[in-house]
Every structure is written in structure tokens, then in C-alpha cells.
Length: 496
Image 1: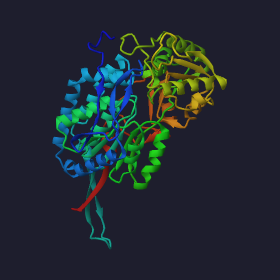
Image 2 (image 1 turned 45 degrees about the vertical axis):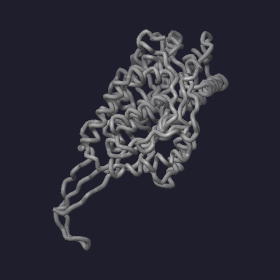
Image 3 (image 1 turned 120 degrees about the vertical axis):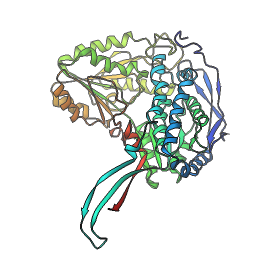
Image 4 (image 1 turned 90 degrees about the vertical axis):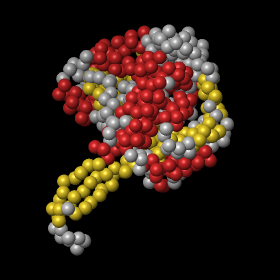
């Protein structure tokens, strides 16, 4: 066990209850097991909601909306601040639970999984009036058959959307849901929280924290289930005004189709197949570090990963050799050990899916130059070795999101060809450009069909608008964009 975090061993969690209308009630479907992907042992039991539970949660959120939406902004933001402090106070308890559920390494868990959840509540505890109200310059208007002329003034005022279903992915459960719940609540919405079924236990604890810090009954509701039916019920419900979803494009399309019936507002962060363009004048070490984050950062289970290394032919052999060397020295294994860099993927089914993709890469003419098999020294756990495949952009492994530690390296000769390869994808979430020529890097970045582009860095700016082009999603969040996403614009007009 880790010598960084005392008490890393985790006792079994028994969670049977959902939060609905300010009360903790037993889930109608009993419980189901949550498995540690590193050990294949039981982490605990999670509440298993039914469709009726989902409807009850949506109705409770609807009933709480009128009171919460008119609660003074200062009071709402003060609760955000209290929530952030409470999450930090429980960090030592939450961290081992998150690691056990997700398989995140100590490094990723302690830096990215728990603290950022608190940071997001802090971020949305700031004054939001600059977003909520925007005065427009008055317009001198002539008389019309509608009304007398005059100086006509206007205010763009943001109303809460209403009841928001927050549906999360399994890779960063706390951070992902905190990034949905906090701005939604700050803007005066009420929420129904639906965690991913693979790792919901920390989210149950998060909702308990929000309940304990004083959010009024019905403002935060929790529905969790092993199957898809309760989430589908939320998508169909007339009580839900908006769905904020992070997950696969396949599921996102189904939500899009079903939500159209009631014109639900949508914020969807879906799949990615990020291209990292490495030019002939690039800092190779920096580029390799960026591309290698596909392996080193949560085992490639991140939609922003640079899974396609699109490399200038003059640098191709060098970059591939360095990537292969990097992959082979990364420690794969127990995520609670401080030396571990690559933990497991979330489940046996996901491991099998990744292995099938690697096999298809071989079949379609790709060369596996690193990894490509399970680590031989690990008898238990859903582990995949960091894998590097060279080939073309036409291979299935280069076309489809794998969500695992697999990188495909593709060569190009001219700038236009490299850009064309990067853009030749159904996805457009996050791309990268590495070049010593800053003018070229900016020019190329602007030509990429992706919602986010990193130039010579894999670092994020958390206040920058975030979202995807094409099948990578709808809408933007991050910073003030999150507040805009969870609101409707109302124009108020008057004559001066």
C-alpha cells in the first residue's frame, strides 16, 4: 500500500439510499456491487434506483426550483464556498474511495480527482452578476405602428434553465459532476445527479456533503443505478429542462434524439480522438511527454488524450523510438503505490474492448512497436500495457475512440497534409500542435476542427471555453462559459 497516504486501505462501503427531496430513501432496486478495477475485489454496495425513483427525483427538483431560483445570489454562492471547504475537509476519506473505485493512481487521485472537485465549487462561489445581467446601449428608434419612437433601452438577463439532469462518465466522477453541479446551482437551477454506474460511491458522499452544508431540500437530488433505465427516464421526463452529459458519443446521440421531443437544452461532452501534430522543428521531448500522457494520465481514459501522434516524416523515427522507450519504462500496477504510473482500466469489458482494437490494428497493417498485451506480472486487475502502433489514419484504431492507453503514430510530409490528417476524424474535441515556429503553430491551430487546441503544451486553462466540434459534443463549459451554459437569456426592453 501507499506510503504517501496513511490509511489507504478501504473498508467496504454500504450505500443503499438515494437523496430525493431532502430525504435519504432506500433505492427501489436494492443495491449492486462496485468492483475495484485494480484488484477485482469488492469496494462496496451502491444504491440501485428504479424508474420511479428517477421520476420522484425529477419531481422533487421541480418543486424546489421556484424557491431556489429566487434565493439571493449571495446566499447561493455562500453555500458553494461551504461545499468547497467541506469537500476539502473530507479529502482524506474521499481519496482512497476514489482510487478504489476508479483505479486512478495516487498521483492522479491526489492531484486531479479530489482537489479539483473542491476547486470547482470555489470557482463558482464568485460573484456572477457580470454574467447574469448585461446592459445594452440604448437605440434611438422612430415611431412605428407598434409603438411611439424614443430611446429604447435593453438588458440581457440570464434566467436559470430550470431542472438539470447531471449525468457523468466514470473516468473522473467527482471532478466531472462538480463541474456540472456547481455552476448549475450557482445560476439558480436545481439538479438531479446521475453518476456512472461503475464508480458512484464517492458521488453518494458528495451529495451527502451538499445535503449537510445546507442546500435546501430538493435542490440536489441523487439517482444511481446499475442499468440505463433511470437515466433514460430522466431524458424522457417533462420535469427535466436540461441534460448535462459527459460520456460516449454513442450514448450522447441517443440522448440528443430522445431529448428533442421536449426541446431539452443540452450540454454534451462526448468522445475524442485527439491529434498531436509534431512538426520538424518541434521540441521532441515536450511532444513525447504530451503524447505519452495518453498512457501516464489515468491509463488513457480521458477524452482529451492525444491518441493520434501525427508526426513530420523527418522526425517520425526519432519520436516513435522515444515514445516506445517511454512506454516501456512506465510502471504498470497497483495504483496505491507511489511508483505506479499506469493503473488499470475501469472494467474487464473495457480491457477486452481495448485488446480487440489492438488486434484490429495488427490485422489492418499496423505495427505494434510497444505494448499490445497484458502485463505478465499482474494476475488480477484490468490492466493494459501502454501500447504504440504505427500505421495510417485509415485504421480502425485511428478512427474510433478507444479510451485506453493506446497511441497510433502517423507520418506526414507537408503542413497541409498534417492538418488534413488531423481533421480527417469524426471527432473534434482536443488537438495539439508542437512547433518551434510560433506563427506557424497559431496558424495551424486555427485550421484545426477542434474545440480546444494546445500549442506546445498539454496543460489546460480551466476558465477557457471547453467543448467539441463534430461528434465530440454540443455546447461549452469552463469558467464563465459554464454559467452561460446553465442559463437562458431573457431580453428586457423599456423606453427611456
